[in-house]
Image (cartoon, rainbow, N blue to C red; front, side):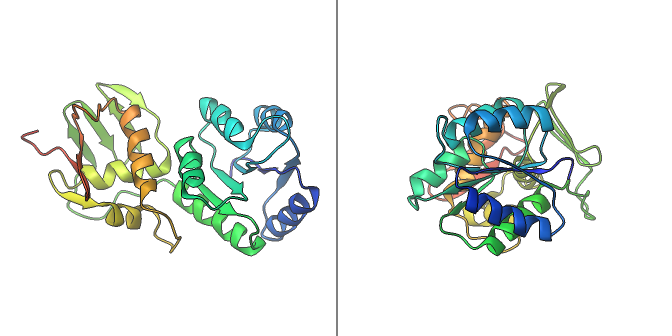
Length: 233
């Protein structure tokens, strides 16, 4: 990891418990207890991971996540006391990478952190007959350089967005179900709602300038999933 894990949690006992379990696994940590401290520390210390409670004094976790995403792609794991699906989708739509519902097992939390970090690793070029550079209508995905461009302009994607784009581009014209895409993204058995795919596709489309109403690249197949434009468009 390029930096420590920043724990943003106003309950000091919970923060201390999370710290203990993470440091047992060899991680370094920082603790803060409100939103203003979180943003200030993130700017100064450049953490490699953020564990972010939703309910905080002053500025809540949603707003902190939104502010962090304006300047950083650091992995973010949200802690929430609410189990409603809409809260989970909201966090993901703001750019969080995963969520854990309170009360939680500290061991499960550590495993979630590890799983997210595994997903963040750049994917090695696959040993298949798929070319190392995929190109379609101004969009280029270079597997060896791990680089994406649109009309020769570089695009910064998260690891999840990169995996999604690769899965779609390598099979143009083929419809991929949400379940199949989830299996490509979360290959370590994590339980994730299928609407997560829609959230990530929406963010990916924004970054590659793909209008869902007139898509150049990613087409929605309603009730099933998505497909990448074939050679005939």
